[in-house]
Amino acid sequence: MSDARFNVVFSGQLVRGADPATVKANLGRVFKMDAARVEKLFSGQPMVLKKEADQATAMKFRAVLKQAGAECELKPSAPAASPTSPPPVEQAGNGAAKTTASNAPAVDADQESGELETVGTIRTGGTGFSGAFTVADVGADMDNSDHQPPPDAPDVSHLSMAAAGEDLGQKKDQRAEVKPDISHLSLKDD
Image (cartoon, rainbow, N blue to C red; front, side):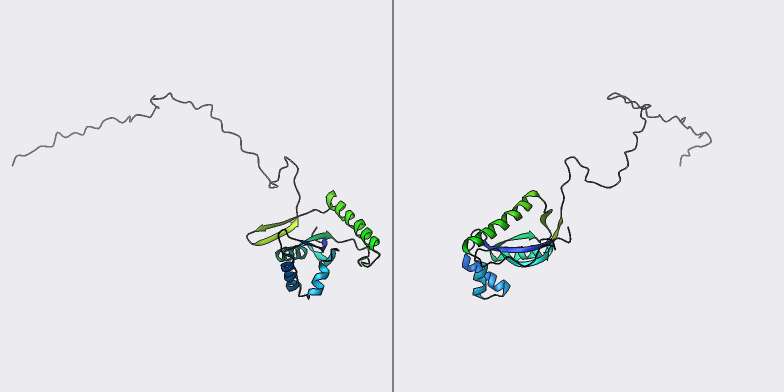
């Protein structure tokens, strides 16, 4: 899924315990927007901050927004056949609510069914690795290397074991004691 595209959607949700005024100031500074445009982000309507972003970019947006104190959603981009323009926001009071309500469950149903195969980002030593992950079946061999079967055990039937304290059968030195002939030698007195 390296070619997956996502829309970064912000609905005005804040990180738990975040001060709304601080979050608004942070978002204004991060996106270089004036206060009026930041207030539009907190209207309660889902707003797409980034369209058709690749996964790495979408994850960066999520991290920056979370650091600023805001929660966002990463929604898979619609296929190219669907129109890319957002539905009109300004409608009659009940009509706008119906449009929003009818769009939201469809996305949630896709996410619950597991069509989105991306699990997340793994942090390793300060660098991020992101990509599609899969889970192996229970009992599956996850080591794909070619394994040779272990060699056959050697034949040890000719070996035996001595009892404790028994002579282990070391060979004795079988050389005959050498007695040199010293009869021709004598000692002199001085």
